[in-house]
Image (cartoon, rainbow, N blue to C red; front, side, top):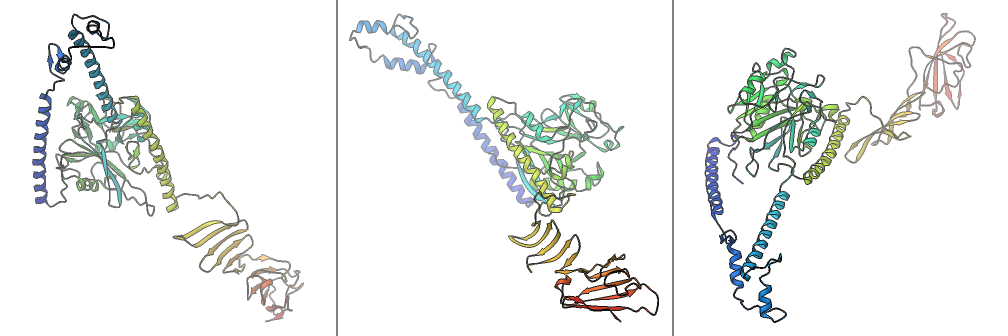
Length: 567
């Protein structure tokens, strides 16, 4: 494992320079020793590899050692017969002398052993190989109140072969059907995949200048969508070298320059090792807080894929999102030198999948599901053997479990902020309700009962508020019925609830019997219900406008009402 030379700039610059120079020198010396060992191993020969008279020297030595026993005795103790039999090889052919027969048999045995060794070595190498690039890894972090992942893709694998960046399409060229990144990665067996270009899922077309495997695709241009006129094109050559072309450069011009793969995101963040993004470039949302996807390249051609969360405001799950300048800052936190970086499609399209694991938190459907997109950046091996399919299917199953976990994450986010229009509980009885907890200790509960609902306080062990079909209570005291249009009653002797009522002159207990209707007000002095009150009283105001009718009052005691008295 070589020493990491691309140290972050947050180290003291002078100290960083010393470390980088020392690490480079150590890496060079280490590589020199490795080259010398490999050169020696290539030139080294053993007796198993040297030939003599078209025979492996090891075989000849074995034959010579065997000739020491020049007298051969078998079970018959007949030397002549044994010597004659020994000239017949394992396939039944007779040789003039025993040495020729032995040489023939030993040569065949040696060839068979060599084939067996080669086959064993081949199988061992295949077992060691994986269906995925194990060299691809990622780091996690949190900055600006936002969680992020940076996937690291080395330029070459452990065997020295290019880990090729590929463009994937949801469907076939010019026949695109939107698809989630996770499903695409599963279909192609990708080690890593992410969303890439902007596009219109309604029209099923990508934006901007699009080249796929050297083929120029039909896509939406700036004459159909003005915003594309502000966006640069990301171009990648066959060795993964990246650059960006200004909006007016066409796909044909890009292809003529030797680029067979392009993506249309928004624009470059870093070019030639220096930040080039200026506030407000490319889009109005560049300075807004959003989930982001960006691709970057180090001077040694290693690739980074950045993704961050956002648009989640639930307490405990808060994901603020980032501006483009903050994406650049976060990349520099981890890597001291970045040659190139480009802002891809983001927002709800952001999706980063490594070995079937979704690294970021999708935001569609209230953070419960992934958005379907039109194209992808991905890295993946060709399947080598049926075992690889089994491995990929196992990772796919793990990915499905993680997808369900993502759905639950979204549900938790909704419950945490009550963003849902409706919260349903399927069990309904006298104790159905919502409980507020302080750790394991219940504090308050909102009951929903067949006869009404109430608010319970665990600290006082009492109902603070209750509503039924007929009345409302506060701390077990019935609230009086005082309406702008009071209820009309025909018997004012059995009013249970305090409040204001209209009493016709014909009503039982009327204060102005057969003379005038009135409005009476009842007060239950000591308790909510009249039956439980030790005293109550009523006051009456006549409707009749005459000095002959004055206000009256009466009281309730010992289970009955007194007569009416003028006030």
